[in-house]
Structure formats: structure tokens, C-alpha cells
Image 1 (cartoon, rainbow over the protein chains, first blue to last red):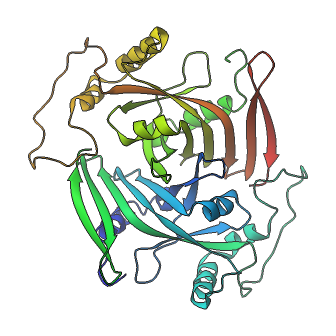
Image 2: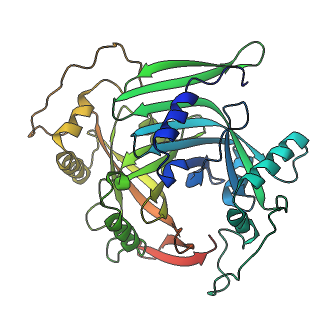
Image 3: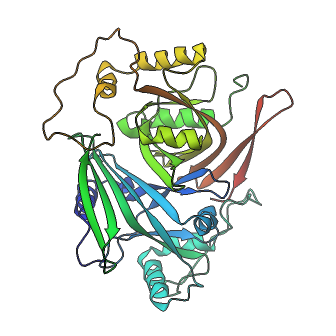
Length: 198
Length: 198
């Protein structure tokens, strides 16, 4: 893992680059399977690749519904449409949920790094009331504050998606490529690609 | 159904209106559950509401993978993010797959209407090679043509999503509302709404 970059990664970096003037170019839709067996879908923010890998990072709140969903079914599919370049990436894989109780110290460090990579303002949301629960007051929440040196709070959770299949569609050139991975004898991930009909 | 418009429908119409100068404002992401039990997610185009209802129409190819997925699990969740107004609609419901073999003549008429509502150019894609299958030639497909009066071809399929839950999030006002429906004693759909924490 990481020795050879996945062949779709450069396409994605190019798309990010050519759409970077648009704030929403770092937003994508993450689908999971709900506890009732129905699909669930929401917009989240791309928080970069994990160092030396093709793994995609997302920050979320441990209290959000997707956490319980991912504990039952760890698979997800990202649908990322770039509105300027008319490119779509469907990235399917398994998600590792890294909250403060994770026993792996390397993962806890990744979580801490992700925390300090976000703005102080966006850290505040993890101090707010439980997302998805009824508003108990019509009043706006009183201003919260957090010291910039404070480490990750309990509600902060890092999601790491390890892609195993990527479907790339370019609506300008009308080309579509499917990237599939398998593990070789040494456990390293190998990618193959194939042109498919759009 | 249809007697009283769903309370979220006006919010959605407003969002469509305030984002209408953006071509991609009619695109949303549709999540389904794949035959392997994993989530599946792709961008599709909003084709309007079904007449006098809150049902959402989508055109697709009967040969696309989502058709077999929907036959196994008919539930879907739309995630529709409006990049100008910073609003998100998560619309969950059941999808009715209407292809040319549908026994219901009213549904076949809806499918025909949907066909003639699309541009002649977009009808051509249903004559192209099987989507998702390997490209058998490096050559571009020779130009296809179709008469504008020709009715829906076999590969043309209308999807109708009947929403039963809508999660609305406004990132500018930081407000979130959950709309839930139930059927009353007469079988009519009744909506309730509740402010929830974003």
C-alpha cells in the first residue's frame, strides 16, 4: 500500500486542481447502508488523502447516524461530481472509524492530526448539541469557544475510506474507466483499469 | 397523495429557483443498495415532479446496474446539495421502476411523456452500447440518429421516487428540519416536521 499510487489518484488530483476555485469542489456525497437496510446519503467534506496512501479522510461527529451505520456495515460509496470539469468519481471501499477510544496509537495520532488540520471554527461544531436530535430551544446556541491548542474532543471522529473500486466518468470526453483492485500474494493492493461504456 | 403538497416541496422549489442559473443545480446523487449489500451512489438528473404529486422523476437506462439493485431493494436516498444557496435535501423513499414491460397503462403513459420531455440528443444515449460493459472498440461510436416522433426505446426507463422522509439542512442559517410522513386511516400521506440540531 502506498508503494505505487493508484492510477485513478492522479485523475482525482487533476480534477481537484481544475475545480479548486469552487468552494464546493471539496464536497462529495457519501452513501452508506442504514440500520434498516435502506441506503443513506449525505454531503461531507474531503479532508485529504492519508499520508502516502490512496485512503480518503473525512471528519465527522461520533454522535451522527452514519457512525452506527458504519459499525453495522463498514462499506461506503463516495459520489464526487466536479461541476466545472464535468467529471464524476464513484469511489467504493471500506471505512475505518477512528474515534478517541481507538486502541491503535498510530490511528489516534492520525485523528489528532486531522483535528488540528481543521479550523478552530469548525472544531466548535463538535461542542454543539447532539446532531439529529430535536432542537430543545428556539434560541440560537450561545457562543461556544475552544482554545486552539486543545486536542480532539470526544465527539470528533476521523473516517478513513480505503478504496477498492473506482468508476471514473468524464462527461466532456464521454469516457468512462473502471478501476478495480485486488490484493497480491504479499497483501499489496494492485489496480487494473478498463474502458467501459458510459 | 397530492391533495396537500408536502411541506418540504416549496423549500425545494425555492432552492431550484435560486440556483437555476447553474446547470448542475438539477443534478443530485442517488444512493441505492447494491446486490452485494454495499451502498451504491451516482449522479442523476432531476426530471421534475410527477403531476400533482411530490414524487420525483429520474430517467435511466434499463441496462444500468441500478435497475437490478432496485429490483432487490427498492429504497433509495437522494442527496441534493445546492452549491449557491448552501442547502441540502436528503430525500428518502421507495422507487418504482417503469420500463416498457410495465403492465400499468397509466405508468406507460408517464414513461412516454418522460421520453418526449427529454431532448432528442439525450434520447440517443439509449441507443448506444450497454452502459458499464467494456468498450469493444477504441473508435468513437458512429453517429446514431433517431426520429423525434419515435416513442420510447426498450432501454428507456422512468424511475419514480415516492418520498417518505426528507432531511433539510441550510448551511447559511445553520438550520435543519426533518420531515417525516405516515399514512393516515384513508391511506393519504401526512407529513410532520421538526427542527433538529444541524
